[in-house]
Length: 279
Image (spheres, rainbow, N blue to C red):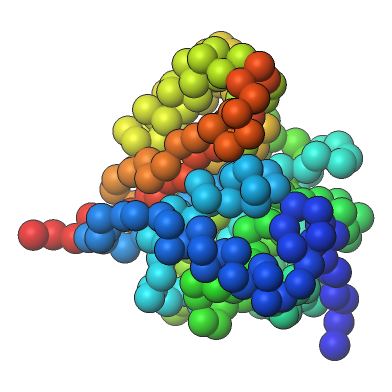
């Protein structure tokens, strides 16, 4: 059966009862009102807070891929619990949530592991990390069958983002599979409401413009901030390599919009990168 990474934050970040969780995710999706996106969605940027705060924002990105088919979802997330100078992959086994098991695409994972020493097997980095796990119930709801490549960045330096995107692209570019890339990040943390919106607007613009160099420049000069800056930038670069031509921000909000407490808020964004269909 292999290693099973058990749910670590069910009952805290999202409900641990399968029926309640399914109902909540479907409600978020039903409340996400989107225009039909005319193109192939290749990448998503999605938040990773507790569902009561960021679930509705996350639903916008995942609604954009309802009725689409992907063989493998590459999920790139930041490490909150431990630092390590590499990217941690779970190269075999499964992740479990209350909605069931999601298997690792072991063939692709092993190839990525062999391709670059920057990527290493590290079960401990995955065991309690929430930023990757919270993406799964949404994926399990909107996609019928899929496998995952779970990656957690211990080092989010921008040269690592470039190397990781090249590593993954070189492995998957000639595969006869359909891939989706998900980058997990929240935005500014614990700034007063209007300061947070000002900071987050910088990121929103770079996502809409699909501009990785501009994003990196403004992150480095502290004009904006994101706890998953590395996964976000890697997803942008990799999505471009995989053929995405456009970015679209589907929803922005922050915790103050939910709680009403605007003294110190956390920002959330949902965006997609897609290949625009020719008219």
